[in-house]
Image 1 (spheres, rainbow, N blue to C red):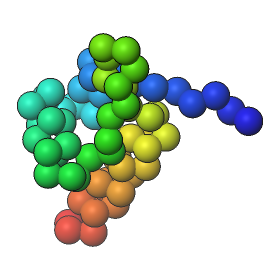
Image 2 (image 1 turned 90 degrees about the vertical axis):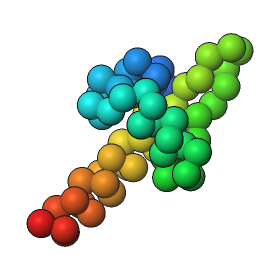
Image 3 (image 1 turned 135 degrees about the vertical axis):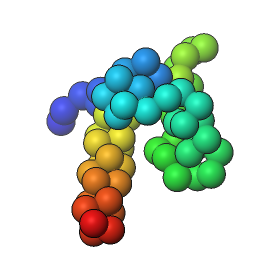
Length: 64
């Protein structure tokens, strides 16, 4: 079984090219994968974020 990888907020912003405020806005709207609190830190499951990004990409392509 593969070990789950987690992303920091900084990693998310860099990978998705989104601002922190955009990510938190999407979270509040329920349109972004939930974060996990590990100690005092927030982390996001790499696989969940990757799946979310793929859906966003496919939806964007369908609109064009």
